[in-house]
Length: 151
Length: 398
Image 1 (tube, rainbow over the protein chains, first blue to last red):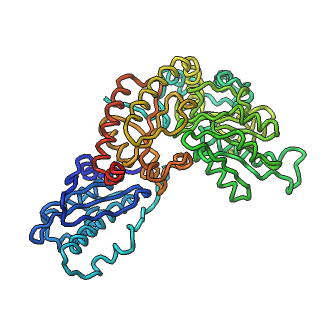
Image 2 (image 1 turned 90 degrees about the vertical axis):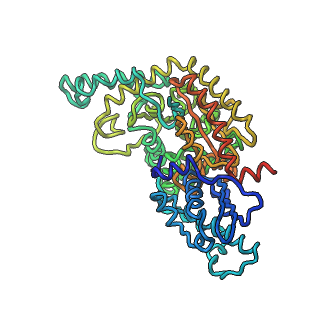
Image 3 (image 1 turned 180 degrees about the vertical axis):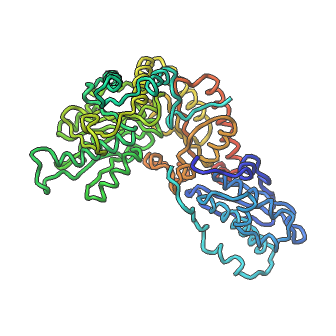
């Protein structure tokens, strides 16, 4: 392999947590682009402002699956407002780091969570500051794959 | 148990090749350029290896130039045709130099990157398209692309990713009729299918030892007598002044032994691997939305390359690795670039399909047990990754 994954990335890739769908989810967010090789879809079940359950489905490489898994672990059981503070760096750090070319996967995971929360706010008619989701409005995730590595 | 099914990347050294190398590390370790007995014994070994390698591809010993491997051989062939066609005596005037090179869209980077470098120096490069799905180059396309100022045509004998075997003899005939130098990168072919440089109408042909159970770091360029050959490396009179540097005698001896052994077993091995290959291809094609990459018949005996829609190849590769299978993929995530394999794209695969590719490549050491493991693990893993893929959900719903 041209890159080395941490043990945590391998663990979350081979045994991903929270895989699946939630029927009648309160919020759903899908980000990414199949032609770029990664799409993440996050389902939220909210009870009393808390993320009672979260599931994901991901089309993508090992780190896309691992970051989806870790992001869902980090927000499960948290207040929705707290989940909104999730950053891609936090996801990457919780996985003991990602190779530079894979950092965009953590960006995608953060955006998938935020898109699902925005969907929840929209459906529930909860008012919010649009600035919270300004980054998502650019359409598609920032496709920064970092430094390229030649094999 | 591990199943090593990535033999197109590299192969294990054969026992015969290792045995052939051992005397030349600390026994017969002289420099072939030296006049003393130690040097002359090494020189005799070198000549012996040259004759055996030449015989295996139906060349003359004087037409074999030892190199560090396929990449160097390809670079040497391309640069020679580009420079020497202009340096022939009498040297043509600068404005009459041939500045056009033809190749194909599915060549290895060891061909495409030197061509890109030449393009920056002012060469015009025509990359022939290949047939969708099969990856075959059409001789008619080559005929139409040949020009008065074409200095070189370089088309690979067999593709490393999808296994397609090109109609080299027909392509070579067109080049010969027009007096254009024809090179073929046969790195994936030598030792796996019959390679006869005369029958193939090639002027130059690259081969690499570690693709046929020889050691890494050694290869050869066949260059037909009379075809232009310029050195890339200067600094000595080795290889008739075409390739400076003390010869890698242990490596060359290993390559000769490995090639002879592969050639001797080729017919039997080819039959067995074709059976394994087709069994895997047939089994995997039973999965929905699964595509064979490359031609079904004009195909290396040991290559099974497929695209599975709705999943990404690196994830497939790493899950298979965890289950004991070493394979390869042309997904962007395994290439270290943003783009999936240029070969799969040239075959007409859309980006999202090309991301889901898997290549299993066999060798004569491949066992029934390894194939059985792949037959079981690949469909299982494909189905699992599809079960967690939102793209697959959409494809399934149509």
